[in-house]
Amino acid sequence: MKHLALILGTRPEAIKLAPLIHLLRSERWRGGARVSVISTGQHRELLRGALASFDLVPDLDLDLMEPSQHPGELAGVMLRELSRVFLEMRPDIAVAQGDTTTVLCSSLAAFLARVPFAHVEAGLRSGSLREPFPEELHRRVAAQCASWHFAPTESAREHLLCERFGEASIHVVGNTSIDALKWITQREPRGELPSWVRGPDRLKLVLVTLHRRESFGEPLERVFRAIRELVARFPDILVAYPLHPNPNVRDAAMRALGGLDRVRLGEALSYEHFVRLETRAHLILTDSGGVQEEAPSLGIPTLVLRNTTERPEAVACGVAQLVGTETDAILVAASRLLGDPSAYDAAARKVNVYGDGHASERIAEVLVDGAMRRPAFVAGPVELSV
Ligand code: UDP
Image (cartoon, rainbow, N blue to C red; front, side):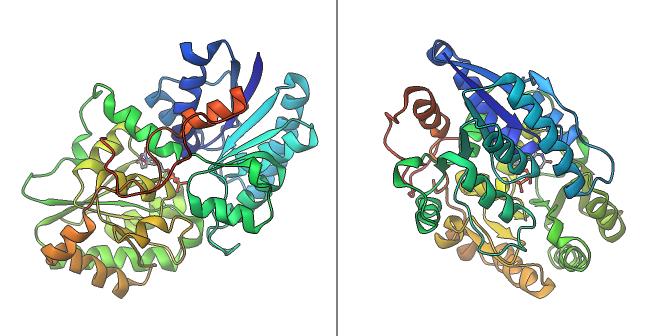
């Protein structure tokens, strides 16, 4: 039986690996794989919340987060600890997802311990090492260490082929974020939404998430100016903004938006509550990777508050717009969607560009059986029933 070690450390990694963990532990695969879930604890609270949404508890928690830790310090400790774990545990395969410090260190530690490494969500490229910083470098390093590249889309596969990774090592499987979305929306809802996000039904909900390191400071201030102006211009909107705990974002948001009429700020939501809010949203403003993937499957028009995106598919089919962080650009794009019903309807389409909800199955087939039985994921305007 193969022993797979799945390593995760942040909220999006837990969300995107949870369906694969559940699948590998299900009746169907139990005879073929033993699974160990290792948490680095890179983001302690957000990670715990995301794992709880999927009823998951790590088998080993390294609990490495320290307050105000520099990414370099964290990476140093994490590389040492994961190397020790891999040398002791000697899994057959190490699996990590995405582009965080946890992925950087998992891939390097696996390589150095000669444990074959599988990279989930491989091949995403913004083309700039500065945006997203430092994630673009992390995913490039992870690719160098990987024996299996699980690319979410055809364009991710193209990037890997351009970088001369072997064709046979690349599998287009879709993004496991869509598996997670399907999983959570098909489960019986748990608990009421917190009162701070609930507003009168007559108001259109504008959902905001912002947390990227490259936006700290002036870019965030420009986005907050746009939000203030939008609320003044459109008396029929309510802005809900679950705050990332990072003080660089949280304190700036409280200063710029705290106490404003029709702007609700609160704690980060559980995954199930956040998805429930996404499904009710009229418009989403975000710099999050995961939210960019979820919104098209739910049919919610999205403004991406970044200068580049490694998820161009939704922009290409017109359901998302890359607007950057300039106040005027955000105001123009948001005002059009909020004020022009035909522009809104054109962007409010459910499209299946990032996954069909079967990515984990394809990954399990390759890692456990050595081959993918289901055909590779092909993006298209097919509706996903989430
Ligand atoms: N999310 C959540 N609660 C929130 C905000 C976001 O559970 O209050 C989820 C969201 O549905 C998505 C993921 O967190 O699946 C995105 O994580 P994040 O934005 O932290 O990271 P990124 O995707 O940019 O790497």
